[in-house]
Image 1 (cartoon, rainbow, N blue to C red):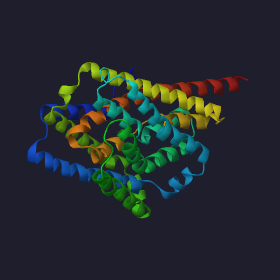
Image 2: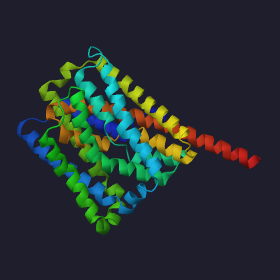
Image 3: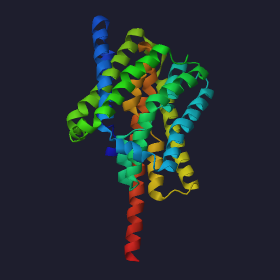
Image 4: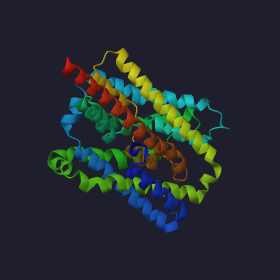
Length: 328
């Protein structure tokens, strides 16, 4: 039953939402907390750049066929699914939550969980490391571009020049600076993952608290009901099931080995909360971020539970094949 329970980080996110609901940031405190959040996000992307070895980026391009499939699933299939959700009537799915679902579909893949599930399932871990890393590197540029393009089609107003400048300054510039300094500080940072975890998770919790504080102050939640949240949950499940099924079918149709299939399934079906929440903070007006990131936070927990079960099934099948081969 433990695999059906929320992970600790999800519980912390829920706690941040609860605190924002009871004690939302207002006035001068909100402004100061917003500045601190911006600095924390810049530090987060600097650390991402500094910890990622340049050799990993180069290796990501060597298995180009696998990488193209995963990037296609992430930045072509998912956006197409997101646009298809626009067919759901607004009487069933409020427009603000639809935009959150569309935004979710435009994000890069996860890094840690994609690699972890690939390893549990017995897949191609080096390919998963390269694919997930490459997805996040390109996502800093591709995701905002897709937001600007597809939100106009989806009635979301596109992306402003100020938002583009903020992305370049707050996300891309720190990441590139981290890459430049990686040869000198990368090894030290990689050896201290637990020490730096509070920066990774703390920055996301700060954004969540600030986003839901703005939502409370602006009265955004007055527009949504429990039924609306239930519809978002159902559509999140539908998105994940579609992505898992299509990624499995594509990998088999193209003749990938089992290990590569596993990497494709786990890297091509997931969406990154760690990149999505800070990016939303840079792209969208403060009053709308709560509704934008809510579908992503729900999707985060759903994908962890579903992929944990799927990884265990892959591992069990591999163990059964090994046992059969040993008896033969």
